[in-house]
Length: 146
Length: 112
Picture 1 (cartoon, one colour):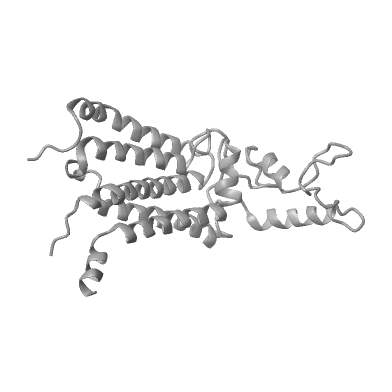
Picture 2 (cartoon, each protein chain N blue to C red):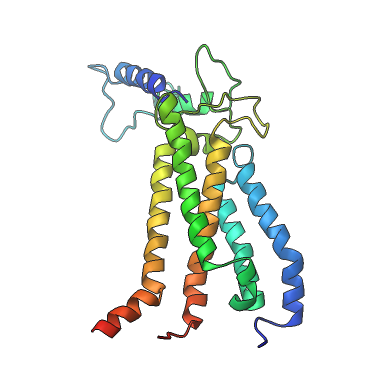
C-alpha cells in the first residue's frame, strides 16, 4: 500500500488527540443551554476532529471513518432532525413550541427542546463542514475515469 | 415558549409604549432605557432577559429554562431565525458539493 498522510509523529499525535477533540465538540453542543457554546460551535469543533484525521492519515486511509457519503447523509439527517423538533412543537401548539416542560435551571435536561435542537445542529454543522473539507481536498485527487 | 401568548403580551406592551402622544423620537429605540428616568421600558428584550432562566412558572410564563440566555433566545424565542441560518448553511454546502464534484462536470464536458 502506498504511504499516505503525514509522518509517524503526526499520525500518533492525531490518534491521541482526535477523540478528545470530538468529545469536546459534543460536550460544547450538549451543554449549549447551560454554558457558552452551542450546536454551531460544537459542530465546527467536531468537523475539526475529522479534518485533523483526514490531514494526518490521508483521505484514503481515513475513509473508514470519514467518507463523502456519510457526510451527505448526516448533514441531511441533522437538517431533518432540526425540522422535526420544530414540527413537533407545531403539532402541539405553535412552530418551535417548547413542548418539553423546563426543569431545574442549569441541569442538563433543563431547557426542553433546546438540547435536541443543539444536537441536530451539531450533527448538521459537523457533517457539513467535514463534507465541505472533503469536497475541497479529497475530491480533487479522484482521477476522472470512464 | 408559548409563542402565541408571549407575542400577544408583547403587542400590548408595545401599544402602551407607542400610545398617542408618547411616540419616541426618531433615533430613540423603543426597547432601550428611558433617557430621562434611566428605567428599562417594558419590551421584548426585557422580557427575554427576565424570563429566560427563571424557574418554571406554568401559571404565568412558560420560559425556556436555559441557563444560557443566548441559547434561550437563539433556539427558543427566535428559533425560526436559527432555522433560517441552518438552511443557509445547508444550501451553501449543497452548492459546494455541486460545484466541486467531478461526475456532473465531466459528463457535461463529454457532451459538449
